[in-house]
Image (cartoon, rainbow, N blue to C red; front, side, top):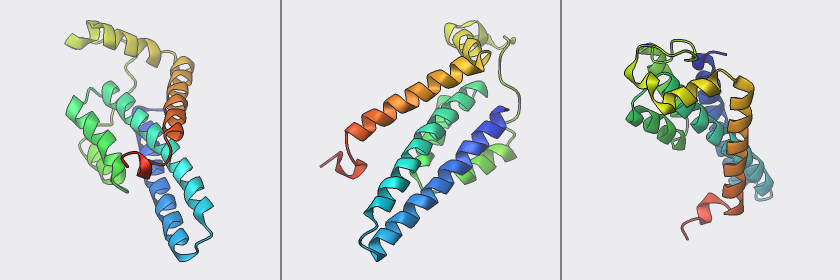
Length: 154
């Protein structure tokens, strides 16, 4: 799977789960007994949100986006459906084109420890996927232990 197809899969998935969560919130407002729908939709959306953020960072590093662009891609996931226009913009500008960087290039940062480590993981997709899934599950579990996001700052 190319960086473009991976990013697009999670960008669209994140927007779809926003729709699912908003639909569940509306259903709960109309039918009081549907609190479980919000819990289920919120859980699905939370997992997809974290997965999208992880994918945005992974693809952003691979595509050599500047830190601000990676931060914007992650931050836009907070806004309902905003990952879709970002995806379209990145596509239009060609910023999702290219393969995974498994080999060093003549780019100055390719000799640095971070890029070497990045290429090591990219060249071992099973290890990379397992590591990222474990990281997302650990963060998801931590956030679940903190309770609903609506109570975090009370």
